[in-house]
Image (cartoon, rainbow, N blue to C red; front, side, top):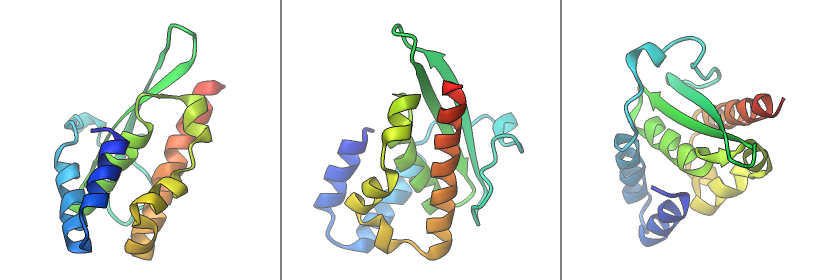
Length: 139
């Protein structure tokens, strides 16, 4: 699902309870992360829940590094947040990932105000990891 589709769906849902249910449903749409990818190298540190991000990099015909992410969590709501981040970043060039203001995207969904401080910190760790992977792909 595209990030724009998620934004449109969020605008349709008025109640936060409905939005939370939707975020949980998004988590259920994640492609399964292979069990062997649940490892220390893929683990996102700084999250209260367990979160893993697997990154693959390919070159576009223009020679740009394009990053693809798969992710998983042991918590339903966090799996949904992973799905939102993947819709925003996966399939983008490293340069575009580094230019994307993830905080503005979260604010657009109202998630900046709706998440607990622990979830916000975990989300910041996830974004930092994605941007770090993009920076490494440029190097």
